Length: 117
Image (cartoon, rainbow, N blue to C red):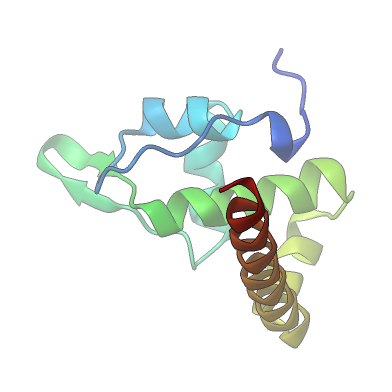
């Protein structure tokens, strides 16, 4: 059985437009049947379906799956709680806070780069 692990241990998401369910499973540390179940539970998660009903996930889907995974496995939310959290203002605030932190980190890294030159 796959042990839930910290998001820091998940692989880097490659620069691709579409990902198969197998690739997303590996990138997010979640089995394919769990991904299919989450599609039913989280309306925001809707991969493109092509020939033979094959799923193709985009980068934003992978990021959302990682967020759902963190809510369920690391923060102890129930499916309903995670669904409510994602649709609440808290999720929007978390997203804004994360973007601010990223911009701050980029600035700090650019400062370090200048010092190293």
